[in-house]
Image (tube, rainbow, N blue to C red; front, side, top):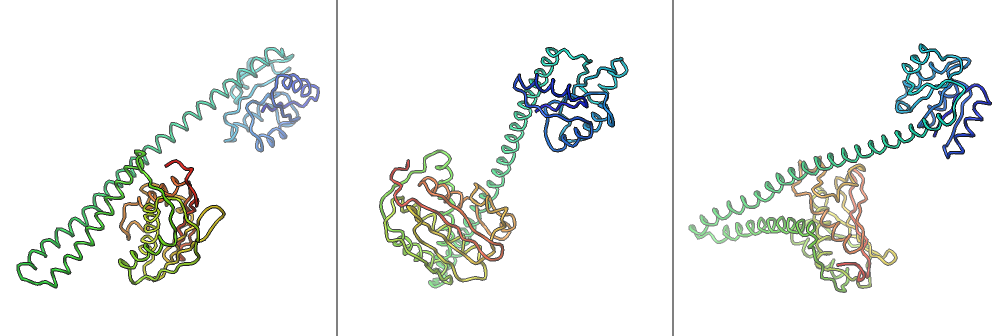
Length: 374
C-alpha cells in the first residue's frame, strides 16, 4: 500500500486517481501528524511525502518515521515545488528519502519510480523469505543433529545397562551353580530374564524406528475385538506390575479392522508409561467408547502430568521431557512409534494432562480402516 502525504487536497486527489488507475492501493494523509499516526497503525511499501507542509514538514516526518522499527524498510519519495535547491534535495536524502522529485510532477516519471520501488520491495521480500527459510532449515538440521547425538548417547546407555546387569547375573549364576544353591540360582535367572526382556524391547523399538523411516513398517490387518485385546494386555501388565489396579470404563461391542499386534503395542506403551510416570499411585483407568465411526481408547493415570507447552511435543521422535528425563529411563521413541502406528491406520493420537494431576494418552482408531493404505 502507498501513503500519499500532502496538505493540498487537489494534489492528494490527482495523485491518488492516477496511481489507483494503475492498480496501486492508496491511503492518504493531509498533514505530517496524521501521516505518523497512520504509519503506526498500517504497513506501507512506499510513502510519497510533500516537503512544504504546515506544522511538521516532510523532512521532520521522514526523520520520525525512520525511528519506527516497523517502517524502517519503507521507501520515501519527497515531492517539493518550493524547496528545489541542492541543499534541500541533500537534506531530503539525509532525512531518509530514497528519491526527491520537484513539482510540477511528471506523472509518467513518478509512475516509473513507483513501479521500480515496488519491484525492489517484492524482490527484497522474496530474498527475506528465502533467507528465513534457509535459517529455519539450518536451525532444524542443527536441532535434528543435536537430538540424534543425544539419542545415540541415551541409546548407548540404555542398551548397556541391561547388558551389564545380565553379565553380572551370569557371574552370580556361576557361583550359585558351584555352591549348588538352587533357590539363589532361580532368583538370579529371574532377574536376568527381566533384563533380557528390557533389552529385547529396546532393540524392538530401534528396529521399528528404522522401519518407519525406511517406509517398511508393515501391517497385518484383520477384524478383532478391542475388548478381547484389553483382556490380554491387562494380564501382561499385571504380571509385571501387580501392585497397579487397572480399571476399565466402557466397552466397544463391534470389531475393528487393524493390525492387532501393533494396536496391542500402542496400548502396552500407554500403560507402561502411565505406570512409570505415576510414582506413589496405584490406579490406572482405561476409557473405551465409540466416537462416531471411530473407537476411542484412553489410558489415564494420576501421576506427575505434563506442562501445556510440552504436550504438543511428546509424540515427536526422540523427545523427552527435560524434568522427567533425569528421573526416568527411556529412549524417547515409544510414543513416536505409537503415534506412527495409529496415524498409519488413519487414526489420531493425543494427550490431555494437568501438572501434578495426571495424564490421559488416547487414540481414535477407525473401526473399519480397510480402505487405508497398509
